[in-house]
Image 1 (tube, rainbow, N blue to C red):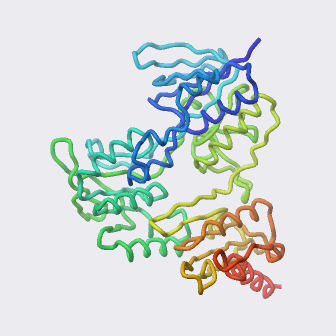
Image 2 (cartoon, helix red, strand yellow):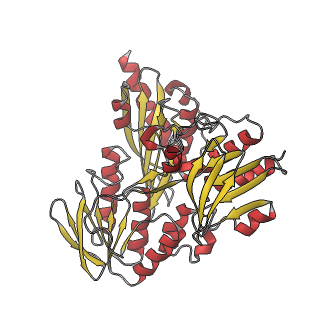
Image 3 (cartoon, rainbow, N blue to C red):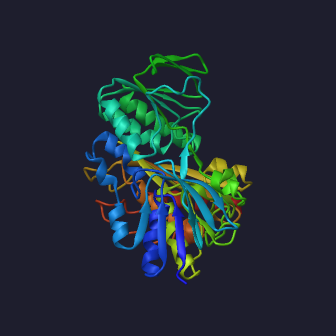
Length: 454
């Protein structure tokens, strides 16, 4: 009998699972359900739509429902999953019309993603307080931005820095409220301080940052917030607010169905993306990951990971021969011409985990200094002194920092030791690098430190 695979979620991981599974098995029945109006779109592109680099929101659509249907994948939009009955192999859905329907499956894939974390702020229900997760969110924020002069961003990570650029480029004054000593708190403090300093040096007349604070309440009239008050009693006028305080996994369906949870309330999965209940898989932002450096489970929600997990789950549904090896948390963003990238773990995380840590931080030109486009980059290496392995790299600057971080990712993935890394034959030409690449310079400093420890 032909198997029926039901996928809940239409962001990144769900559609990837469906598309790859169809290529693996042309005969299997595939149905994809989403509570949204759209599926298979790039949420990562939303800040660039707001900025107007991408003028048409439809350009962020990767595949339309009609495209999936042409490949025999049935798509059901605005169908909200209410409850999973694992023993019956059935999901109860609520349609937009209010009708409840029962959908039976042989294999179930949870690709329910994550949702914005909403901090406990008084009067948070004002109409001009937004989060950025869906296409509809992007359209609303862009519309209000066009008729505003001031905006407040609450919390600050990758989405925060990307929409900050969008707002500054569109002439807005921006308040940033962040609980950390410096914005981009996922980086080590010294790197985060450099990032914040660059933003304020470049645009301090447009951007004001309130560190070590939380938003306490909003004030306003007729359902519209026009003032934000912080926990330090700082007060700022605002035309609208965007909350970027992080995200949380959508794991409630799994909990209700009795599935095992992993770290940070994400869904537990093994290396084949199988949950604790037979016949149910989980992929993307809703489930835990194995960290390649620490060998511990973590929750690192990234679009690139979601796509890789969807692919792997599809292979396992068809043939059960794909191991998802884990993640490094490799990520990159920018603020105008300033690149921000990292991979592996930070010095702070390494110390917390009990590593014997060695670090170095170098500031170098990204190519031959006499080249007209040579720019400074800062690289921070984190090394385990016992294994002599590189376990983390952070790279920032107006030059090509991200390609050094990408190279480091490969080294970390393969547990290359500092001594081995020194032998890496990296390409050189004046327009592309210095004769000794900045990454090799940083590794040489670490190597010298290790020699002194003998």
